[in-house]
Image (cartoon, rainbow, N blue to C red; front, side):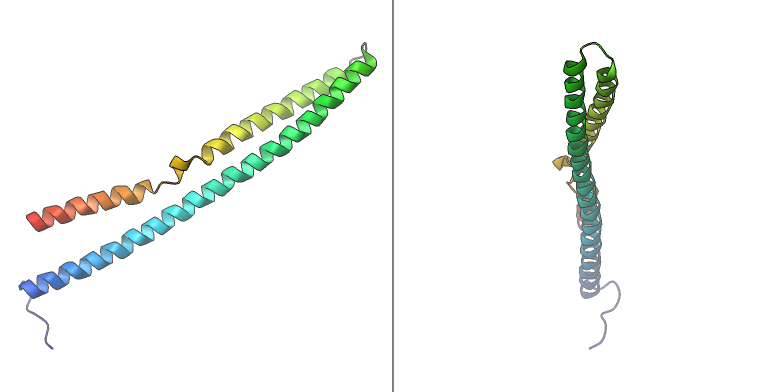
Length: 131
């Protein structure tokens, strides 16, 4: 079968179908790339939350040790050093927890670039069809 002449209805329909298929493949590839990136960000946030939990446990142990030393000595300053160390570790745990929770936000998983690109493509297609 011979190819339809350029500019014919059949040729235009064939071109439109080919371009639509190419566009769909590109949009799917963009979606996959964006979702892989978003899932990677989710796992990094999860790792930060685990790290925050480890720091929280360690800080609690140090704070408990400081309290025990404080009660045992009541006069010496060994407990003060332990309280400072425990307070710093607790601060690190809070910072990691906040950063990790932000990274795990569900809004970070939405494929925003893909949806914006699909809207632009749909607008361009509708203009091309109507124009």
